[in-house]
Amino acid sequence: MLEFDRVTRCYGAIAAVDGVSLAVAQGEFVALVGASGSGKSTLLKTVNRLVEPDEGVVRIEGEEVAGLPLPQLRRRIGYVFQEIGLFPHLTVGDNLGIGPRLAGAPLARDTVAAMLARVDLDPVMAQRLPGALSGGQRQRVGVARALATEPRLLLMDEPFGALDPVTRDALGRRVRALHDDLGMTTIMVTHDMAEALLLASRVLVMEAGRIVADETPEALLAGAGGASAQVLVAVPREQARRLAGLAR
Image (cartoon, rainbow, N blue to C red; front, side, top):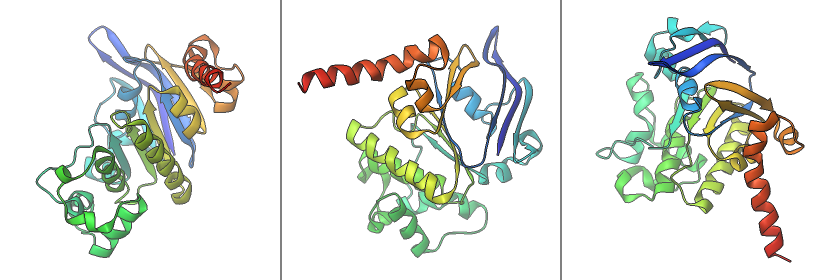
């Protein structure tokens, strides 16, 4: 589904992404994890060309993204980001359907209702403005909007970082269920290793612009991935140990 071939992106003398080569199969749910500045968001944005690599090639289903017209490319990709980015002057329904409308295929009212129900929102919310919704509800709209063009590839850049823990957990579970039900390929950037372990089928750890570990959650919990990965795994492991101690 997705291939990075020696992709590099520099900002001045700093290589934010440093020669990354990577293949992602159809149907995988991949988490990109690493400290701030490790290059994970920059790598993700090379897929929909929000960032253009200085070197290397990104391919979707064998096609180089650099050779595709931007509107065509971005209709093939769902994109969810932390800031949500809903237009405040448009209703929820209009926000959700903006991609299909720009493509000349506006969504019917019942389709909008079905897409809101898909992310556990009442269809009556279609007539509300984003300012009348909670942060969690707005992010659910953001997920629904990303799926409005029925993409096979979903990109998420710290999608739950601004949410409270209960909402974050519920929306993460919903996104994982949608991934499975719709047969998508999903790439999620997160700094939260616990979130990566619980949601993803494959975890990539980035450090200084490079992939330093590529493991399943089970392998990481068993000690695989090297020192950098295990530093990240140690955080949820220690939290679990402390919580278990409180329950005694």
